[in-house]
View 1 (tube, rainbow, N blue to C red):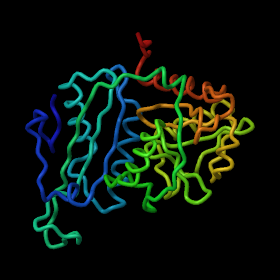
View 2: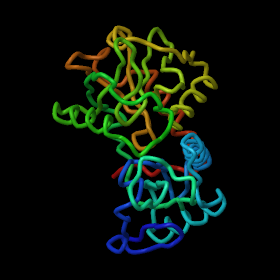
View 3: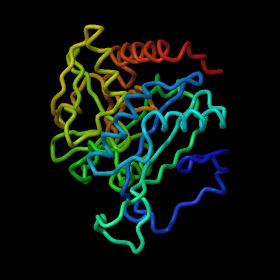
Length: 289
């Protein structure tokens, strides 16, 4: 398996990160995950725009142009022969020795790019059958719009869900539902798709954006606004979404059944519309064997 370190493809076992790298020391960096179907990227440009936007928000200069980055990522995908899978890429602020919280202004830091590509098939069974979730207080920082490497709060919530045999942790600040540990969350109530507004409390998921677009195009009312734990518990349907899980229904929350405990009709419609967008960009999807 080859991985990308700056502008070089190297064997994974030969890749190294400097002990003084600020990404390692402080989580000082940003990242993205981009999905491929049939060897073609889906919403690549949107992900890369968000990567550069996240970097700008923390005054980090990505050491490659968008065109240069695309060439590097294409080589990574080709070298690893990825058909249906994910590309994970991150950029740290670079090496600073000695370690210092202050970003130095007396010499330029050289950003460090790393990326890996893996074959990851679609989980069609999960898309239909869904999974369960727990609710958990959102203890993360207040700039969740930045796709930062610093994910300790997310990890703690996700691990708690795992310990309770749940797929996800739905986060809330007091009564206000925000998003999940590794995905966005939406509810359906009285035929309306309801999801948190794209502000600093959530990451504006690329999949979330596609869902809202196809919902509007197909006459499903959309409400981008705060909703509460009570709204969540009284929802007709609940689903989570991300680059890797597409649209996955949530059937139970904190042990309580959502609706009839199955994927709801609007969630099913939204996923069919979403798949149509994938097919339009990447070609027909093969059915799982």
